Length: 308
Image 1 (cartoon, rainbow, N blue to C red):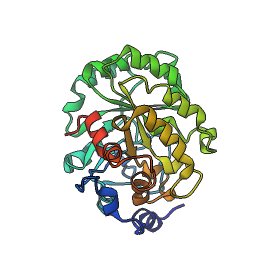
Image 2: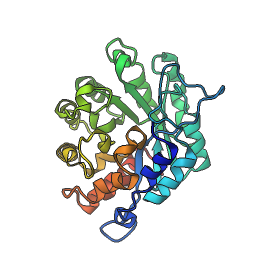
Image 3: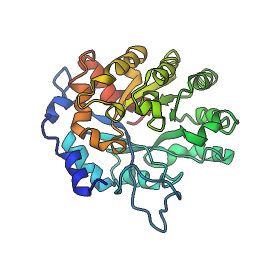
């Protein structure tokens, strides 16, 4: 098990990469760095229990107080908090972060997707301070929701409420093509390039299938993609060159204004430091122009989520 000291050391102690190099635009101004995915969670307690049987990504809680100094050290201006699954469908800790630090945090909240009565929550969803949209997952048994009709209420309700939706699913391109066609006003954001560590083939570096599904959605203008968590999937050390062809294919299909960098650092923090995750995009992907980096590293996700 990784100790607290080992984690803090791995997250903060990179030191070898200059933060200034990650933060300057081609015109010499400051580039705003926005992390499109971070999980935050507290220790379980009587009033904040975890779902029985579920385990967190790390042995210790990843709290607001741990994340803020990491952001400052790495030069990250803002973070999109994606509440994790093990506390259940609750967003209160993420919203607490956004309310305490409104210029640093926004939330893509969870919702009880199996309950159609949840539709009543969506019209006032963004009235919650710090709430930006919804994030849904269709992994393991939850993939059944895409075939048994359980999720069908959600897409028109989210479109009507004007809520962007991040989704994580494995090789479900045809399903989401239908959603994108039927609901052109609904902003759909593919998580992690369409990859998920819950699939053995993906853990082995077999990406062509899920990447092809994600590429098939690029023709829909209301679909965009998070080029996120790339070190977590790589089978190589920094600069993760086995990921470069996949990043490039998606970038060329979607363009800089529909691609977003994100770290998802807690799902593989031992694979790369925060600075390396940033420098992977700003320093090693030579097919990206400075203007491309400006969009991918922050401006695009801010526009997509209407996060002023």
